[in-house]
Image 1: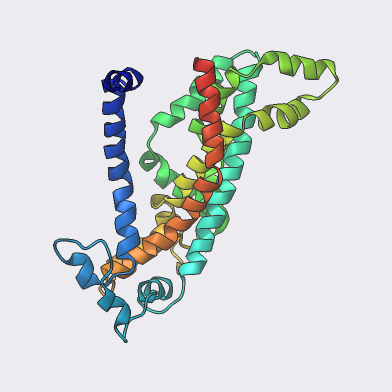
Image 2: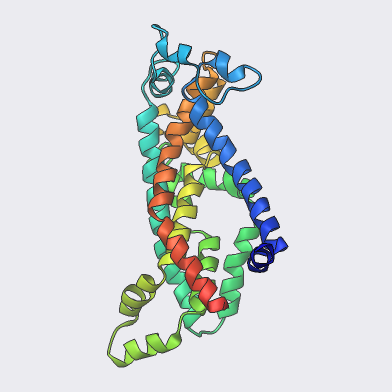
Length: 292
């Protein structure tokens, strides 16, 4: 019986499972800490050793309720109630940037992958070279351009510089290179136009990479702090990373309210990821079958 078990699962597989389990624990531990700390007061959070379950005394104290930290996070230290406005700004910016990145990157990647034209490689290398330039090197010229365009403290000012990404073009091109050209030729024989081929054949069959690109683009803008810090001086035009940064700097902020603020800001990302997780699994299955 022992030999049969060893024959089914090798020592290397056991070590791989152990290693992956350890990595999983380290990945989810900060999330568990954020979740539990959001329901604690500052004293309990800073106590050593850390207690992972909120004290029952915290829930029964008359001056505090179960959602006190969340109330503080939403109201703000000065009672300005700007949280939902900043959250809405982040949702608009991240959603629009994700949609435009998917559309423009997939369109550009499709052209670079399936059409032959003079200077094709030069165009692709020029796009890829922009990935080597750090944002810090162009943010001041970009700010001056935005000032001239009078889009500072506006939603377009937060969106326009990130309508498309070079990484998105690269990701879509690499995926579409493997897309069967025979399908496209058959559609042309049937009289379908080029944009129809792109919208009715290429996009529906590129769901895994599109979902991946959408989530990455959404996350990049949801976490973007540097550009909104330059572009948004008005409180009502700030995004959620700026709100959290300011909330953490205030003297009145306690750790429990800060964890509640971080938890609330993480909810849209969790919803987006889990709602599109099946496409990741589908993409992994396709990749595995091709590899086999």
